[in-house]
Length: 342
Image (tube, rainbow, N blue to C red; front, side, top):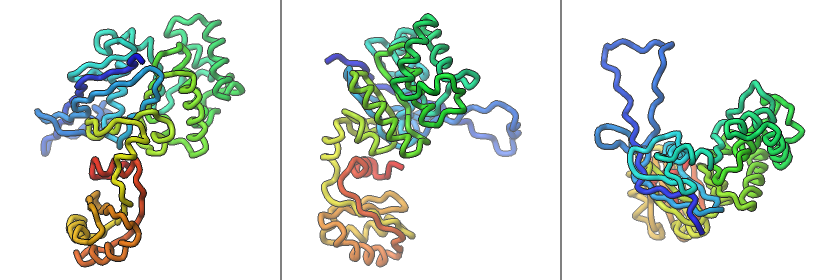
């Protein structure tokens, strides 16, 4: 099987935002502002490392997920692979083309679905697709034919003549997928495609993505929804602070999660002291701190709750909330990073 995407030691450093001098002039509210860099690891020289030596490989026809919290480096990775962001160092290849030196060739081979739908709101649905086709030299008649096929495939052909404002959020996102596919790309990128959708629209979009994958398309998706990653992806890369923490199928990743039940206790007080107290209990195999929570692992699960509450109170803190979680992608993520995904 051939490789659709490969990154080698990919690194991206954003400059740190400049500090305003004490007593210096304030920026006018009408002046242009520079966007703040993403969250990440503070690098040498004061910059922010959004990616810190990322190595990935995606096979042709694979549904591949990048899983991580906001600021993990997912969107920066997609930005580099789609030629919108230039890497500080390292190499990246998409459909056999180098994203730095063959950017035009890369753009002809990819389709992009942004996190927030960005259609031309002055055009109706089918005009958005035909206009997109013009960018790739597709004749109007052929673009119209392809557009109608895609609108029918995604069950929005009745909205072909509708303005964008007349489409629901889920319909707009399906329109964005249709737009991304019009020029028949080899690789489809989706950046948090279901953010802001209601549960029904999210499930409907999952069905669309499953159908595209069954057709043999290579799909790369960023998400911070555990269930979405588990349900859709052949393989997942878990990233945080610009680093790859684990990469495998959802089934194999879940097998790496701590095997015991995880007991999440939200603490009012010193979480470190509460965790230290809980570690002394028989039957507790591990305790992590993800303030204001402590995360205790135990084979007997719920049986230890009374003892855990007493241990927390003995440390001088109080338990405000308790939740039990079986081994999962989320528990693996917490065990790798020491914090929750949300």
